Length: 313
Image (cartoon, rainbow, N blue to C red):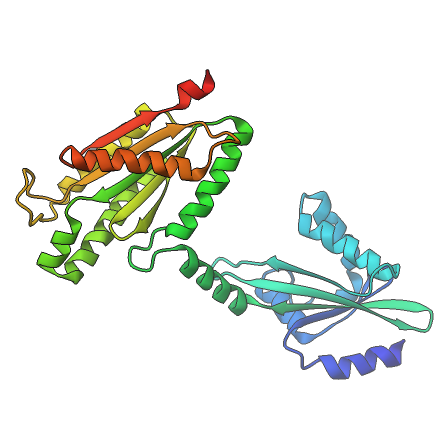
């Protein structure tokens, strides 16, 4: 066994990943320098720690007792390797520090020396990959101009909320917001002014979302959307009205000859209780119809309807 460990040392001492070897009882028999350095950096140990006095399995079991699911999963995975039930075990986990987000993959592989089994444990830093994945995920679900959720993200959230509402017999409220005469504003003042306008509206909407706890998104062009779960139409109408008032307070110039010199919006708002015979498209169709009617009646207003009482009856 000693020859094998010495041979292993000669190969792995230069490996950047944190690496340790444990025996079949879980006792640490070797760690490389990267393992020691990471332990000190993370505050898990000091310079004088004697790693061969530590039982890795025991430490995992103790973490499990303290409610750490990661410790429980690792302990079980290692025991499966020791008993020969599996040939490899790996798990990805976060290990964030106060100053940076970090992720690691733990890979465990057994090898036998004589009649004894040992496990090589490698912790590989995959933070750059995870950060890149997060960036890609954000690009896929957030609008690049306004930095709020995009249509894809909203549709996913709407579908999830719809399914949950069917299961729990909860109401869902949907508001579709369309900026009045935005095309004229964009044409008259230029695309940069139009973009600035959309950013300001999105920031306003997101601030209200944070305050009132709803989900909002830029749904396309000058159109925004909001979803609430289990919120009365009376409450959602008040929030929509708060948005209209705050929008006018931004005093974004409106080039069209209307009664209001500043940018306004029209809103179609619907509340309903989803069921298995209804679809998300039904909610959008109803909200769109109310929005169209609000535009037809002069803009700068909210038209709403509630189907929830009828559905409950």
